[in-house]
Length: 311
Image 1 (spheres, rainbow, N blue to C red):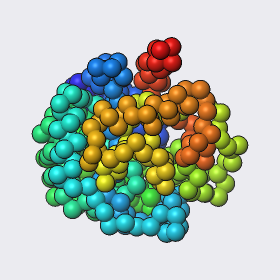
Image 2 (image 1 turned 45 degrees about the vertical axis):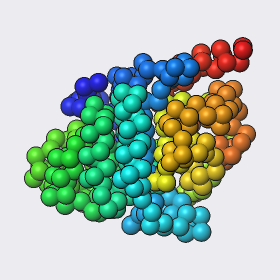
Image 3 (image 1 turned 180 degrees about the vertical axis):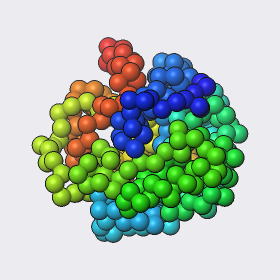
């Protein structure tokens, strides 16, 4: 998989959610992981999201952190030892795909984010590594070090206003990085849902004016078919919308990626979601559409699940 220098589509604005949706889909389909299967026939994931820290320096009104009783700020982070164990496991499968540091915390608050990037590229040199950040910790020297360590794309969420555009664009130009590798995402316009596809974070966040949907939704969701979600402590979660971390097959401290990905917990969830059944936690409280990415992986899994059901 060699798409590190892929160009932005001229039809898509990188500050808008459509660009991210398109890019994830492109990486997934061109990923070696899309064509791989485990020995039992289970399809691989094509994307991994890490919550490398449970700490954030901001409190956004559309985030569960807006209420500390719902989600307190926890000064916890993934260790280099655990992260290297996970990278070695992935490398043993010769996995390629997209990796993103995002989820429940601000990645740039990890005390050794450079070490994590270097480990990623040491074991998975053909993976595509993104960081999603609020930008508060960024300085030209720090950003230069990120890309030198092997980072592929830095996505900066601009929450304060359009005046931030010039600041970060000047930073980008100073370090000599193209717009397709240093992406500014507009997150300050309420009339456009902060430039993101807003959700209730599995029932843990509310925003004034948000559309109220009848829950549980009677629809498929593709997250567990194409993406592996890993928390700072090694726990595998259903997806990054489960801020309460209600359902997990276990921790990668104690089990392999294969064991977690194909666990009874994950298989049962896939069977229910493939039948448009979200009547279980955390999915019954979630208003995410869940079908914007991963349809191809879902179709591959559907064939596998059909065979399992016939046995």
